[in-house]
Length: 170
Image 1 (cartoon, rainbow, N blue to C red):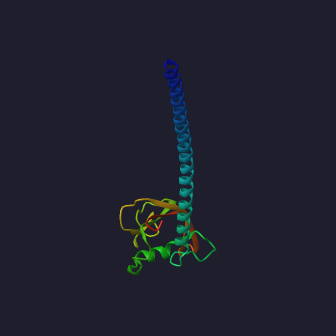
Image 2 (cartoon, rainbow, N blue to C red):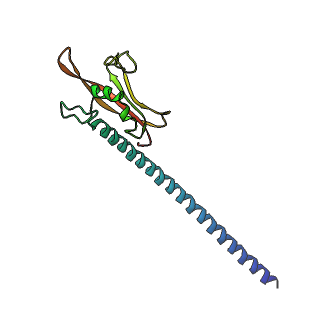
Image 3 (tube, rainbow, N blue to C red):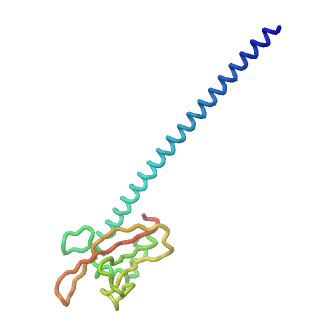
């Protein structure tokens, strides 16, 4: 009887050891799987961010190429006619033209001290806010050329600017 109990104990011990080894292997492979999943999700998040930024740049390119803003003198894909944009600002018929909650054109260089553009201080101004419906949740921007005709000098002048948009459409 004594030998039977001892051998049963050894068998049970080996079964328990095997169970602990199997549990440890399962936990090890779960940790490896979680590590692999976190790496693949972070790369997926980065690629999604890159695609989103490309879409925003394409959206800004579409905005700058509409006839209401397009600079038609040269073949410039990212040039905005500031004279047309100033005329666009005052039109009530374009209120629901875009799904943006915020749309601003800023002059980056040279910086003027005029602040927001109005009919009285144009072209000596820095910003032209076309749409400002709400607080800016997540705005995106792209650099463009801001061009206009200088009647006193008789030439076309282009400056460095930035288009900033925010809202559901981006």
